[in-house]
Length: 413
Image 1 (tube, rainbow, N blue to C red):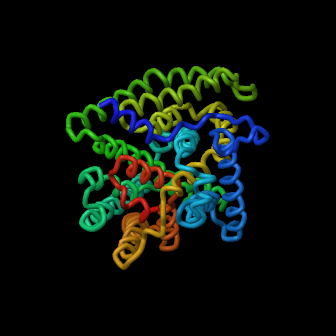
Image 2 (image 1 turned 90 degrees about the vertical axis):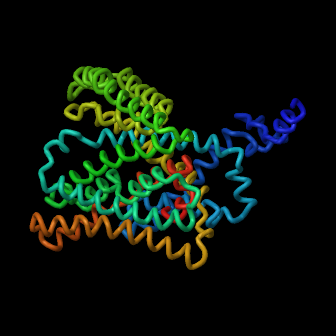
Image 3 (image 1 turned 45 degrees about the vertical axis):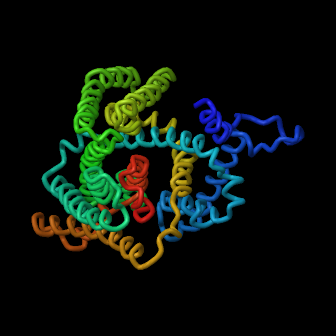
C-alpha cells in the first residue's frame, strides 16, 4: 500500500511556486505561477483587443471578439503548436488560470445582477411576459428534442435528466448583458422595441437561472433524488436568508450613501466581501458559486447611487482583464478540429438551427398573432431575443464540468 501511494505521489506534477528568482539566477520565469499568469493575461487581453478592433467595422460587440480569441488561442488554432501550448498555457498552470478567471466571473455575474431591476420585471406588461414565455418555451422544448438526438449519437453516457435540462437552458437563454450593450450602442434602449426586449430578456434571464439551478442540483455525482432535493431546498433557504438578512444590510448602506456624496470605502469592501461569501455558500450547497454572486447583485437597491458606484469601481477591471481570461480558459478546452465527418457537422447545424429557430420564430409568432406587432418590429424582437454571449458559455461549461454535456460543449460553443 505504501509503495502504491509513493508511486502515485511521484507521478503527480510538482505544484508551481509563486515567484522566481529571475533569469540572472538561471531560472525560467515561465516555470513559476505569477510571471506565467501575468504573461497569460497580457497575451489574452492584447489578442482579444486586437480582434475587437478588427471586428469593429462589422459592429460586433467585444464579447464576440473575446469568444473567437479564446477559441483561436486554444487547440483549434494557435494551440495546435504543442510548443506554444506547453510554454504559455502548460497544464500545470490551468488551475491558477481557471481560478482567477472564475473570480472575475463571480464579479461579472454580480454586475449582471446589479443591472437587473426586479421591480421592472414586476411592472412588465402582458406583452413582454408573453414574448419572454415564448422565447423560453419553444427553444427549451426544441433543446430537449435535440438532446434526444445527441444522446442517441455522441452523448450516450450522459445522465438523462440533467442532460435534457442543460440542453434546454443553453438553447433558451438570452444574453441579457450583451443585449443591453447592443441596444445601448444602437440607441434603441428608449424605443418600444428596446424596452420590450429588455423586459422580456430580464424575465428570460431569471427563469433560465432557476432552471439552471435545477439542472445543477440534478447533475451531482450522487444520483440519489434525496440529495438533489436537499440541494434545491438549501438553495431556496439561501435565497430566503439573503432576502431577509443580506438585503436589509445592503439597503442600510445604500441609505447612508446619499446622492452627491462619495460612497464610503468600507461599504464597497463589505459588499464585495458579501459577494465572495455568498458564492462560497452556494458552492458549498452544490449549486454553483455564480448563483451567490448573482443573488447579491439582484438584491442591491437600484434607487440610489450605490449600485452605480459599485459598477464604476469594478466593471473596467472585471470586463477588461478577467473576462477575457474566462474565454481563453474555455477556448483551451474547445477543439473545433474534433468536429469532423458528416454526423458531427450535421449535429452542429442541428444545434445552431434549433437555437436560432426556436428563439426567433417563437418571439415573432407571439408578437404577430397576439399583439399585432408590425412584421419588421416582430422580426427585430426575434433577433434581439436570440442574442447569445457569455451566459450560454457559462451554462455549457458548468454542464461540461458536471459531465452532463461533455460531448456537446464543442458543438454548442
